[in-house]
Image (cartoon, rainbow, N blue to C red):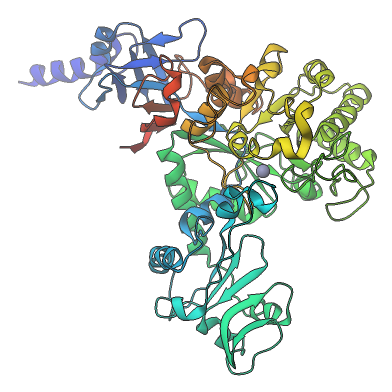
Amino acid sequence: MRTDKLTVLALLTVLPTLSCGGQFADLILLNGYVYTVEEEQPWARAIVITGNTITAVLADEAEAEAYIGPNTRVVDLEGKLAVPGFIDAHVHFAGFAAQQHDIMLMNVASDEGLLEELRRVVPLVGDGEWITGGDWAGAIQWMAGTGELDEEGPVDRWEPNRFTIDDLTENNPCFLNSYDRDLYLANTVALEAAGLLTTPVEGMQMRGRVPTGLVYRGSPAIARIRSVVKPKSEERLLNEYRTGLQKLAEMGIVEIHDMFRDFSQVERYVQLQESGELTVRVWVRPWLDLQDEMFQRGLAMGAHPKTGERDFFLRYGGFKSANDGFLGSRGAMLFEPYTDRPDYRGHYQEYNSDADRPGSLVGNPEVFYNYCKAAVEHGFSVDAHAIGDRGISEVIDVLERIQQDLDADMSMFRIIHAEIVQPREFERMKALNLIAETNPSQLADDMRWLLHRLGPEREKLAFPFRTFVDKGVVMNFGSDIPGNAGAIFFSHPRYVLNAAVNRTNNEGEPDGGWIPQQKLSIEEAMRAFTINGAYACMREDSVRGSIKTGKLADIAVIDRNILENPDDLLNLEIEMTVVDGKVVFER
Ligand SMILES: [Zn+2]
């Protein structure tokens, strides 16, 4: 008996090492297609995962048998497609999370729509908590061509009132706003809290002597209400993060490159990681304003915010800068004036001028130079928002000087958005090995009005994905979620990949694509949305970003073979998401 028991024990300990020189797997995906984005072995049939690591990528799934132990979960892909998980290299996560969890009215311009959204939100927030924001009618105004284009007039402005929402919001003061922040809506509880119900002040819409709850921009009434709004509770903010994380997992996104102005954003990530709830890798970039504080605290790029050690799950990224504005609001800096505003060529930001607010017409490149110099001296890179051709060119001018003066490796510096690029800039970017952090899904919005802003010649320069690849500039994809006051941006791979490959909007228009000469192949788009995002984090493409033995296990499973049929990208569904070896979503 005794011997038998020992034999069994011996077998149990020996068996794992007998099979395939490793151990039993924790997770095996088989019976589908595996697209690895690795050139040497682009296709496989099964993936073996042990702990957080891919321990085998098998061309013959019969070989998977050897890795199956008593605790191995075997997932039958049923002919579906496993790919490296998607890396969204540009998100504003706190804003996205708030928009997903809290009130979101960008698609709302009716009483029914407002009520429907409040019915969803009120149960999510505690009694007495304020419900604020919403940006009502933003996307709808946007859809109507921002009201500026000759062929499309503005839509009629919808004006809500407090009586519609009072019953639903008895216990929650509301202070909502239109997307352009021209109009605000306060419910009765909010007016009471501000002392405005019985003694109205200037800026309130009145029906006779009764306030409707509508309040106008910049008025004394706004100031009064603002002074009594209570900030969101920490628990509510954590719940927003939880909802945001869930949405990312549902989209097959395994990593985000976020940015922060407030260290509490980072602390929230740490807290969720400690409670086992952080289901996405985070590369979190401080705005340039935080440079001194980052240096004083001794924080390093690539290091975990708490341990200070090099980390592949949660770590600080390079600094985030903004060097011009946006094309939609004619803030992006151009060499030649806007076609639809001949006296204007865009503006500088506080990071490349002597102004302390964005919007300056006079630049000072030394301001940006000094930020970049300090970053390099402390081991950081800088990711600079630049959209217009002049904005981009002036960023490269400064980065060339940094490279020469400091003999710096610039290969982790990124130009964010890089939307209107003059032909000469590609070689300059390549010479410095800069990364182009582009936003394909924004093309869906911009294609509708860019001709108007820039005219036919410059329009052709927009979103030059093909040229970046042809010129050897590393390009990664970000979404810039949640969007701006007028547009919702999309992180779902169906929109990001479709915009890059087919260059159509989210409805598949126009036929044949917009500026079709800049289309990418699906293989190129996949690299930009996976392994290139890993490369852009201190070259982590050596440890993750593709499906390869020894790499960290970040995987998305798609319901169809998009490599075979890229025309069908807009219909793709995510079936499963694996981050660091753990299944964080399955349909
Ligand atoms: Zn952004």
